[in-house]
View 1 (cartoon, rainbow, N blue to C red):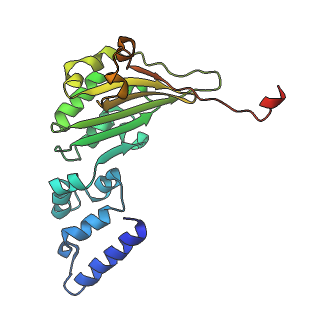
View 2 (tube, helix red, strand yellow):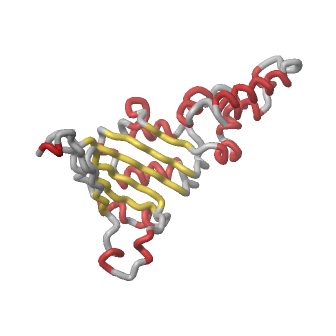
View 3 (cartoon, rainbow, N blue to C red):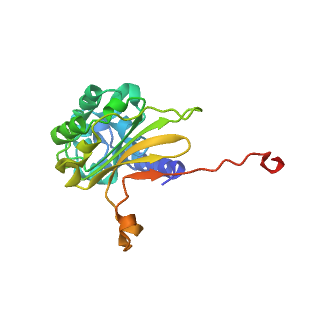
Length: 216
């Protein structure tokens, strides 16, 4: 549903209710869900959490979890610049979250398998799918921050049992450290062992086309 369609539906809902509504608590849950469609997951929690009992019931309801996924994107200064801020944020959202995606940069210390495990166990016990993306830009001298943590910690049973796979991608502009739920790849059906045993590192090469290339 686009913004124009949302506005029409919302206006119709308000029109149907305008004769009987005397305060915000009189709005139906459907109206609140329409309002929530205008915000991403973080904004919904920030603006409506702990506002009143009705909002809290909606935010923690299973219907709301089905209707939306919860994503933490680029709120580095407000949320995930440190593990302490991520933990504080986690206390404000529902523990029955099923899908969590975190994307960040400029603080490679957050790539800590042990700390992430503690937060997931304490605050997201029902988590089924976990996505993480940390990226660093490669400068003109092909320099970037190298992850010096314990990569093998992402191979422990906590990560392997739910099939959350840690891997690295390098392209012309960025180096990205990722965690994704396991998905079977086409090459895993091939018979050659040389293909089957290389899945941890992906190199993406980009070709630059220069305007004066033909003049060389």
